[in-house]
Amino acid sequence: MKIFKSHFWYNKSQRNGIFLLVILIVILQVVIILEPFSKEEILDKNNTELIAFQNKIDSLKLVEIENRKPKIYPFNPNYITDFKGEQLGMSLEEIDRLHAFRKSNRFVNSKEDFQKVTKISDSLLIRISPYFKFPDWVVKRNQQQQNKQSKIIDKLSSADNAVASHKVSTIDINKATAEDFRTVNGIAASFSERIIKYRSKLQGFSYPSQLYEVWGLQKKIADKVLATFKIIELPKIQKQNLNTIEFKQLLKNPYIDYELCKKIFNYRDEVAELQNISELKNIEGFPLDKYDRIVLYLVAE
Image (cartoon, rainbow, N blue to C red; front, side, top):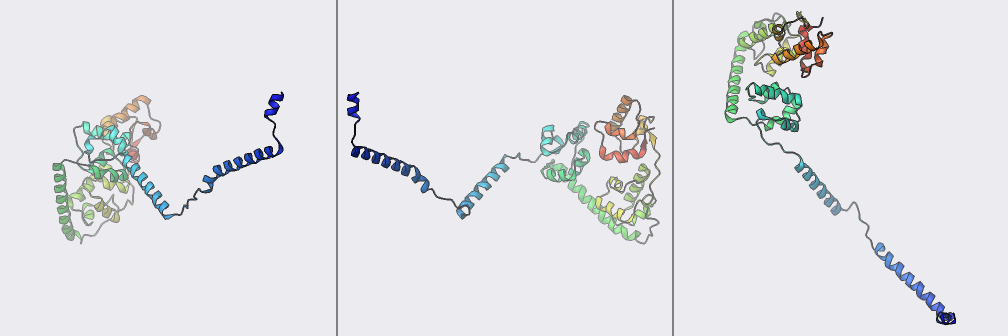
C-alpha cells in the first residue's frame, strides 16, 4: 500500500496545477464545439437570388410532371381500342357503341359522326377531336360536302325573299305548314317538307330539342325555327303496351334500333311482365339519355 500511495501523493501546488489544466481543457473543448454554430449564416427567405432559384426549381418540376403525362398523337378514331378509349376519357359504354358500329363494316368520317355514334359529351369531343386524323380522301370529301351545303344555304337565303310575303298561319310547331316553315331564313322547300315528315314520324314534337334530330338540318337553322315556332299544344301520342307489343311494332319507335329492341324483349322474357315503364332503366346498356323520348310511345300495363 505504501508503494502505491507514494506514487499518487501530490502536494497542494501540484493539485492546483492539475485542476487548472482540467479547466483549460474543458474551456477549449466548449469553444471548439460551439464555434461552428456561432458562425452559421442565417438565410434571408426574401433574398431575390434565393427566390429566383426556388422559382427555377418549381418550373423544372412542372416541366417534368408535364413530360410524364401520356401524350396524345393524331389517330384515326375508327380504330380506338378499349385501352386507348379509357386513356382519352371515354366510358366503356361509349367505346362499345363505337365497336358495335364498326362491326357493321361502317366508318365514322367526321367528329360529328363520332359523337353521334358514341354519344360522348360535347366537352370531351372538344378535347379529343383536334387529334382526329381521317384519310385524305375523307377530308377532301367532307370539304366538298361543306362547300356544297354552303351553296345550298346561299340559294335558300335567296329563295327566302320569295316567301317573305307569306303570312304565318300559326306559331304552333305541331300545326305549322310547310309554307309556314319556309318563312324562316334558311329553310327551303326540301327542309320544310323534311320537318313535316319527321313530325309525322314522331306523332308531333313533344320537346323543342327534337327538331335538332331532323336529318341534315343545321343547328343554327333549327334555332331560327324555334325562335318563331313553339310547342303550344302537346301532341296526342298513341302509346302501346310494352308487355304485349310485337317486335316489329316496337322497332317502329323512332328512338329504338334493332339491338335495343332485342335487349328490351330479352328483359321482358326474364321478368315475364313489366310492372312499371321505369323498369326499362334496369336494362344493361339502355340509353338513359333517350328514356324520356322512348317512353312517350310506351306504357306498362
